Image (cartoon, protein in one colour):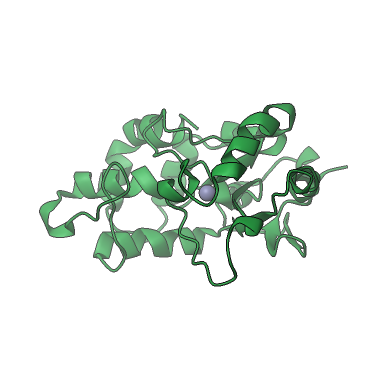
Length: 228
Ligand SMILES: [Zn+2]
């Protein structure tokens, strides 16, 4: 019986509690055990196609997502443009533009799919050397990038599995071909992640642009969260 037969708590939904997750030795990160098992089967399948499916990022806590948020709001971390290939000048952006630029490429703390243990960023370990520095950029997953074979394989294989890629570039969030999601559990989390739950969370957190986030939440939710 999976843990998710019990209702997921709000703390788990928002990445504040990881008691429902376990460290996966095979993938080197925290994941929901049921998602980790399904991912193992997917990786076995990939192996037959000479692809070494590895995880760059599994669970991410609220605290970590908040650090990314604050890093981008303060200019310590780069803010990327709409296409994801040029850095923006923070000083030239209004608060609303700053928030939009961040949400294009980074989740709102409390609303990341990586909080759930059901989602992961993957790459092909067989396609790169030991010194390769993984960046998770659109180019790496393009036809000319090292992970072209992985992308091609995913396109063929994923529809027959419980995994899918939620960020296909059709919503406000940029395309993330490296991000896969274990649907049976993730869909339950999606249903629980409402604007109301997020407003409740954000109103109790110290974070940059909080008043703007709270006043714009229904619109931001529609553009950057609900589309997933
Ligand atoms: Zn991701």
